[in-house]
Length: 359
Image (cartoon, rainbow, N blue to C red; front, side, top):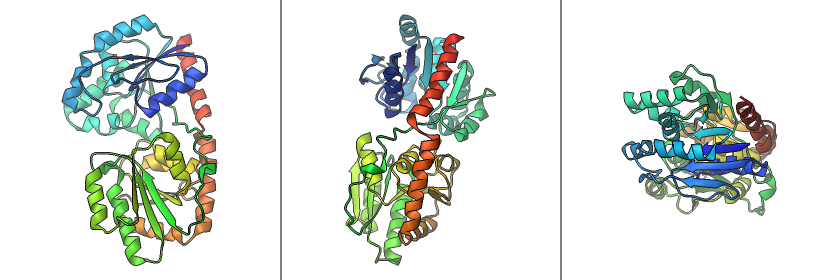
């Protein structure tokens, strides 16, 4: 098949889709509003004058490129078009008048975007209405998106490379430390401040626990969180890793004793899935997207969202029960193997693409 994605070429998610289908022998094209390269894939960069980090007003420039996108699609003449992110690439695809394409919702496009104003809501509804097929990585996100369309969604779970994300990456010596960490964007959505406060509470109440904290990621609130760590007197036990590539993400999860994903909103817990794949037990907030991406009570310990005291208690509880942590780690790996193995997830998408192309 000849497959055309409308998606950001610099995204790890886009690259994962492209590499799978390219490796399967399909001809893959990407029309992208950001300039990036993907091995084995032809990327068609459309310069818009707006960055991916720009505000909604700046991103209106995307819409002015609908004609060019339509022309590119005509030149590529793909068997399948898959548009990613409903309220940027999806809006452009709708305005371009593309036909018979599948639209994959990503998360903030259906959770945050429509709540900004009635116009934002209408744009999302228009985008969803123009797509012939709709994809969602989780049932939870499909339910949220269903507020804006009567169409049904195909669930296309986020797959993880179990050869990359594996417990075998653990190389830490038995140092007697209790390493707790997270790998998320440093923004309010992901509860980094709650994690810092919970670790400070653990340290205050049980100073004998040799806790260490690792935080990987970048984001708008990094300096605020660093200042909070200093205020809470955590600098001596906290390592800020910054943005790290996937290979390092896998190594960090495998070498932690406990992962904490304490978001207040998640369409799907990618980080939780990756941590489980590495055999790392997980504490999560009790929001639907994280409950769906873990095996609560077996691979993960859900805690009420934003409850710092409950989070601190859960961290201390799991420190004192290493056997439970070991059971959780094994259960997490098994859970991901059954539900989120990369090839199995993409095989489902490939079959859907073949069906679409046949029509």
